[in-house]
Length: 262
Image (cartoon, rainbow, N blue to C red; front, side):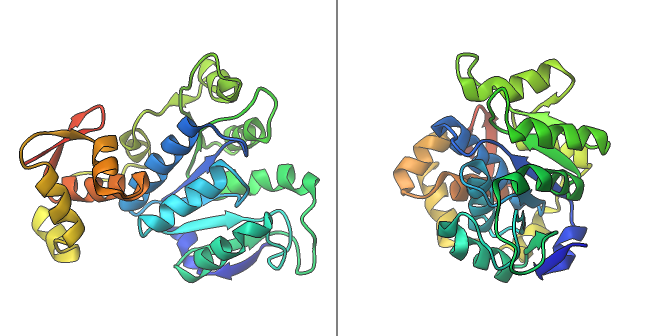
């Protein structure tokens, strides 16, 4: 039995589970925000576990991009953990996503429950993206569940000297698919990337944010991190905005996170 709070229809969308360690690196945060924001811009539902670290970053980046996200809890729907994520949980349920738990109301969040709920995280998703994780972590458990459920497992390559790259590098050595950009996952989901530009303009009219970015790109191409620094915005928000602008034919991705005005 699964208990829901929010919009259950969000589970009918194309979905990706983004999972990783609670103690992520700055690289892990950057990558999580990038993938979550860009996938959300294409209407992909982001599924994670509301825990600290990668889970929280994935949920927040999705919401910042105006997307839909689902959180699988390790306790009852009235037992939000960590406590600092109560507002995040509320925002998820009220923004078209939902909270899910197999535990009835009144059930406390116990450490053992996190490993148990991982099978639900992978089970609800069309595929799983592993960002970071230690050699022995719940991240590998989620990936194992996904493989057993017949789901495609993606992993992001990290620094070979980082202990938190152990899980994704292990998975890549053992059959997981490498993900270096959102398109890798969109291709797996078979989402059509060619979008009618005029239709997109009607759905998403030009905004002050787009005009500001185009102004900065007027004279020369710029990297994503440069645009983030110049605009003062969040990486996930600027990345998602650039993805939409690329779909509308306003900018072109030159590769390596560099964009130019068309």
